[in-house]
Image 1 (tube, rainbow, N blue to C red):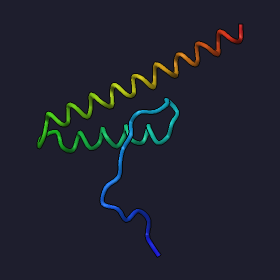
Image 2: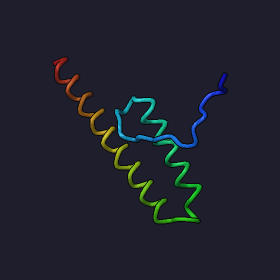
Image 3: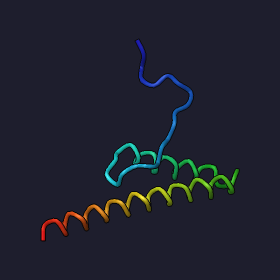
Image 4: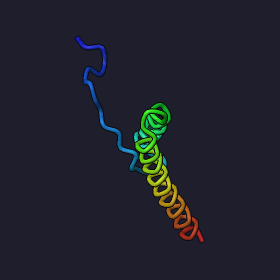
Length: 75
């Protein structure tokens, strides 16, 4: 019998749709990780934050495009 996740590592994937709960959780986790390592490794912190911002921007853009397409289809 196990008590949940027993691995030492897991993969985070911030790429995903605006309403993808796994992508959103990944982005939140990566931001928290970056904050924790900022003093120890500011370069990695910056790169992680930049990656999250880029993926969030892509998700937001895709969401807005779908929303605009749906509004145009309704007219």
